Length: 474
Ligand SMILES: *[C@@H]1O[C@H](CO)[C@@H](O)[C@H](O)[C@H]1NC(C)=O
Ligand SMILES: *[C@@H]1O[C@H](CO)[C@@H](O)[C@H](O)[C@H]1NC(C)=O
Ligand SMILES: *[C@@H]1O[C@H](CO)[C@@H](O)[C@H](O)[C@H]1NC(C)=O
Image 1 (cartoon, rainbow, N blue to C red):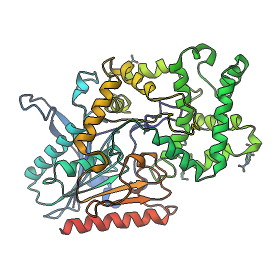
Image 2 (cartoon, rainbow, N blue to C red):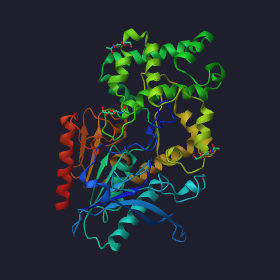
Image 3 (cartoon, rainbow, N blue to C red):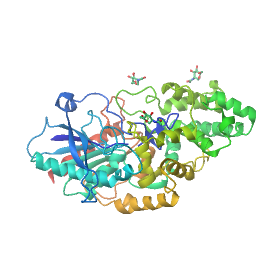
């Protein structure tokens, strides 16, 4: 077998907040590096290469090309294949994974900057065409005859499934982990799953969060309350200075909710070199939320906030909307992919994790309009709600949403991961089975094993291997 790792890259995270976890995506991408070192991926056998990629696949008169980075490991390749393609996504591809990455993310840049004019080629369709071109070229360059199997987690998980659907003559099968398949402007179900995941600790945890947020709401109505909130939540800007404008207040509430969302989405995964923040689990935050010694629910919510601020090495909670927009308007190339992913949400997917799920444990202050405003403030007024509804419909028409028609694709999701709400979690078609793993988070099956993995996760890994083995014999 041969491994290719193409670098595409981006989905978000916010732990105070948008700087670390934004729009349901961890800064740098949603799939972390795997823990541990597998002999398969021993770095001496991994080569970094650059591929001359077409910028616009849909206009043959446009001949601009750019260099796309990829990693290859042919240590185990025998004539006849198979060839495994790990699709990079909304972060930088790493040589710990054997990946082919995606333009605009990581080190692969098709354009000199990220101006709106240049971002026009950043789309899932161009990414799929990049992959198809890559496979075709590799087949002829190395005279490969084997079958290609695509892998991806998070947005690249969606790409892996769509690649098999659009180019079945090039890709024989795919493993699609935690991939959202249904584009959705108002993804309020995200917080439904966050609530349910927190409830796996205890009902009391969720009740306490709800009570705490109600206390925050009450304090916001009084000058003395504002002072208390400034101190308790270590706010960079005092509330008195920003409370007049809803955009800051929405950002404040979204940040508080994001503290929990980020912890839930990555709960106990096995990524390598976990940061202090990445090590924080549902048990930790819920442990605080139900600990009466710390004080009333509001004090506990503040303690969770402080825990995340400390773990991320930041001194104060920055909820200033204008600061966030200023950073996202920066058209310089960047490694975190935030502007790029935001662009894809504004032009293809939506996926906004709004406060519109009821009962509103995290308040109701970040509805869908707050996110559409961000699209407009970052990219321009024409990226409005009508535009977004139209492009999201187009995405679902193009790929079929949850009615996708494919074979030889296994869809894998974790019950704790809020993104499963936009994916296929039940097998409808035996040729494109779903594996729904109870108790695990985003992309859990993509990381190497650990002793603490639940048996259902180990079982899922075996099933995936069996499916791929079966398809390769077809
Ligand atoms: C995260 O947790 C792992 C496993 O318990 C530990 O080895 C590691 O040192 C922790 N990382 C940090 C930065 O605390
Ligand atoms: C509750 O919080 C107190 C004060 O921080 C701490 O000493 C205690 O260990 C916590 N209790 C539990 C059960 O975690
Ligand atoms: C934009 O980002 C680049 C790279 O991160 C940085 O060097 C530059 O200072 C930023 N520009 C502004 C105006 O903030």
